[in-house]
Image (cartoon, rainbow, N blue to C red; front, side, top):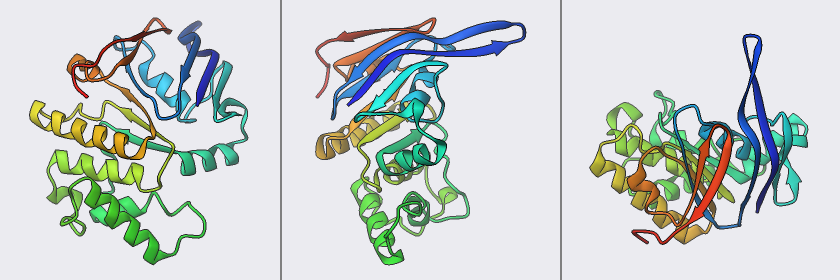
Length: 230
């Protein structure tokens, strides 16, 4: 479970100080699903970075399963990210010279005790779970945008994380491909019961989720509602 208490992130802008997050209190249950929305510059991505341990708050605590990420030494924080948190980004972030399977395997390299054969097998299984079992040896440039994002999803989930954080995962895709990717993410969430937090500007995607956090000027409001789709 995530428990955020009084999370403030302050940036310097010339002589002024700007709060990207301003005293955020937020709870996300294990296996929960949350969409984060808000205007550009409102703090959406900053909040996701706090949840992922990619940045630290100026004030407050970000507690994941009893551990305050904001207080961890960098080496331990890196280990938590490697073992517990998967990331999916708008830009895919695939290595162009590696095959789909090799890209997915990169997420397993930091994990101790995994032999090369096990990494290959797990990467193949992860790609099959997103419908790319026959594309293992394709380079990113040989795949469509939707297929590249499926590779990125497989890479995020191959380490079997407790948390999946997605920052505008359909932002580079057309409407039909957007829906396909969301169906993949939703099916994987239902199957594996990871905690799923997604930033999106797309209201159609937000309506698929019962719990929506809106950020405006660094402050968060959470609403529960019936989803339009399962």
